[in-house]
Amino acid sequence: MVSKGKPSPRSAVTALSDAQVTLLSKKHRLVDPTRYYPTGERKPNMIEIDAQNPKATDRLLAGVSLVIRASCKVKAWGLERVPEQGVFITAATHATQFDVFVPMMALFHMGRRPRYMAKAEMAHWPVIGKWFQLVGMQPVPRRTGKAKAIEEESIDILTSGRPLTIWPEGTVTRDPLKWPMTLKPGIGFIALEASRRLGRQIPIFPAVTWGAASINHWWPWPRKNVVMRYDRPLDYADLLKDMDSWGSEPPREAIVMLSKRVRERMEVVMQEIRGEEPPTEGLWDYPTMSRKPRPKVDKRYTIE
Image 1: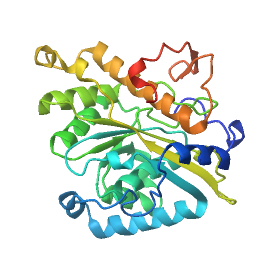
Image 2 (image 1 turned 120 degrees about the horizontal axis):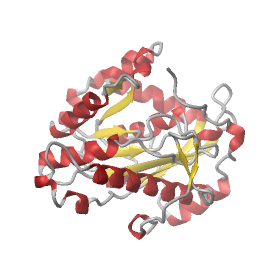
Image 3 (image 1 turned 90 degrees about the vertical axis):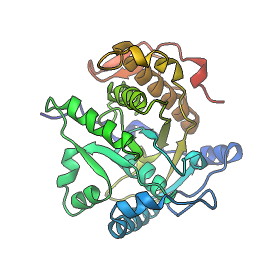
Image 4 (image 1 turned 60 degrees about the horizontal axis):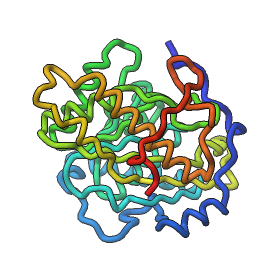
């Protein structure tokens, strides 16, 4: 069984223009995430680095960074928010397969080594599939009825002290204009249940990447602009107030609400990067493969 629908072609969206990147650079400090410590001096997390196949990781990171520099002009802002210590969740957009590499490369260059959830098929990719597993990939066997087991593995990663990266849409967006579509509820369950087990709110940082949707992966030149924002942590303390009385798992309403907040924030941040308004008809609903009216965005999740 394959995922519903197909991603829209590159012609569905316009490339991120030099003018828009210039506009963003006037408002934010854009840095090069393909190099180590792009925001300045940091203390790398050596426990994570030493525990995650440092030689293999360095080689794969160098190779990925080289390919990305050759195929696009990538910039980022907000990476100074990446914690030097402690657990956190990165919730990343998934407009293209390219978006898997940009946030992970950036986090590795900031001295952290998060585990990351990725579709199990990637483990079987020629050559690099084995490398993905060596550097922290947690294979996700999709559509196997093992959702709970996958969520428990994710929670174990967090409660053991490691950060985690998730692409909560579950697959490349099917929105014809490549805006974030409805999220799987797993992000909400994992964050709430792991927070309960640790007794505190685990930070969730949305990471929004835009520009790669216009790259021709067979012939990427001239290089396209790609920009990522590593956003401020999302506040969901209100959803944890009654966690001692939840029972066996978090309430469904809280899970859905947190997933909704993550998607809303992703859309707002992508709106700023693209310099465009999302479709007025609504958000793309993956289960029905159609647009649904967009709820009014909570003011807490708008651009500051």
